[in-house]
Amino acid sequence: MIKRFLSLEWKAFFRSASFGKSLGIKIFMGFMAFWFVLMFLGMGFGLFKVLKEVFPNKDPLLIVNSFLFYWILGDLVLRFFFQKLPVMSVKPLLTLPVKRSKVVNYVLGKSALSFFNFLPLFAIIPFGVILILNDYPIANVLVWMLTLIIVVFTINFLNFIIESFSAETELSFLPIILIAGGLYALNHFNIIAFNELLGNGFNAIYETPFLISIPLLIVVLCYAFNFKLLRQKLFLDSGLKAKIKEVNTSNLDWTKSFGDIAPFLQLDLKLIWRNKRTKSSVWMIAFGLLYGLVFYTNPQFMKITPSYIFVGIFSTGIFLMNFGQFIPAWDSSYYKLLMTQNLKYEQYLNSKFTLMAISVLILFVLGIPYVFFGWKVLLAHFAAAIYNIGVNTHVLLLGGSFNRKNINLDKKAAFNYQGTGAVQWLIGIPLFLLPLGVFVAFYFLIGFEIGCLVLIIFGVIGIVFHQKLMKLITQKYLDSKYKMIDAFNQNN
Image 1 (tube, one colour):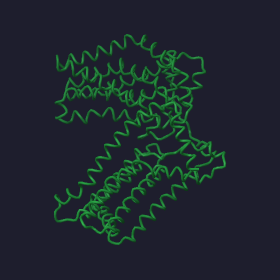
Image 2 (image 1 turned 30 degrees about the vertical axis):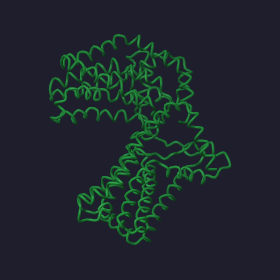
Image 3 (image 1 turned 120 degrees about the vertical axis):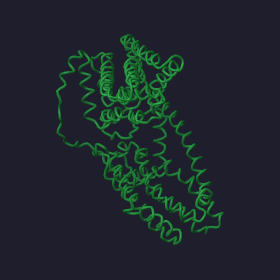
Image 4 (image 1 turned 135 degrees about the vertical axis):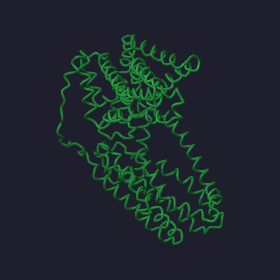
């Protein structure tokens, strides 16, 4: 049965409409994984020598054990944000004579093969070998290494437990932040010395190998708890009974002043406010507005004039980028229905353009107080805003015609990469590097004001030729219409 599950996932991967983009991302991630493997190998082989030189009177193994608390805490936080449970599409299997326990065991077993679980081994094993070569007892070192491996899998299953309980909350990352932050604070202020407690625990296991049964019992309990949680959700009718919520409606009559695109604007505004995933675009506005304080309050950054444009593009375009990069995937759940209606595609896209342009104007106005740091900052933000409206809006709309991944709007927003493909990674090049490159070229050749003027001219040209650009973009969407419908119907 496990072989059959693997065969199904293999076919799903190669038959997916996003296969080409997914393959490109996986190749890139493969290079990144290789880089991290080399780093961990270097740490594993060199750590013993470094610790001997820095702490000549201390045992390197005891020092490593005293720092394992920070490793466990950091690993848990990173996994929460970047490691997701490898859930396969199981509902079709529930009508077949396949035991639910086998499906759940497969899903949990597959999670054990995560890169997050293998990466620490490239540091643990070399360090253990170095310990043995330095006359540490072989049996004790092997037990210590096995204990760390068990801890790695414990973190793996513990992460999924935390995720399952925090998935329903609006700010789903708060539980892990509170847990990790609370434990770190208790340790940092010497209220409870977790680093010493864990360090002493690993020392005890090293000296008394049979104590390895304690971490072994913990990982078994975590696996059993995960098994129970997943098995309870593995029913055909799970999730069919929707939670009853009181819907807060708002008056959107003001959108009627936008004419034919008003219905689409209302649809987008309701979609943004009523779904977890899209709400992140709204919450990110606050981050974008305050982003400049990271740079402008630092005298070192204030000396780097091109950074003004970077901050301006980001600060005035934070909503534009978060919302625009997933057009039209936001509507993927009902895209097929939308395409059966008697509507003009250009109006549909113009509503997206209008929403993004308005957000840029609002963010620029709200960012005017940055003039406190100098008129150059305000001028850079103005040039960046015009460029965002005239150029980056069209770039994002054009990039949207290549989107082939649907988006689950009900999933948590924080660090959710579902629906992300190669387009979202590559779109950053024209969004950031192009305006920054243009500004830098004219800034060093002529001056700051001319660099800003050139960006404004590019933006104005984009605004003037908006109608012609939209006709070209609309045609691109019409050419890709049926490919999008087919792709959005697929479970990535």
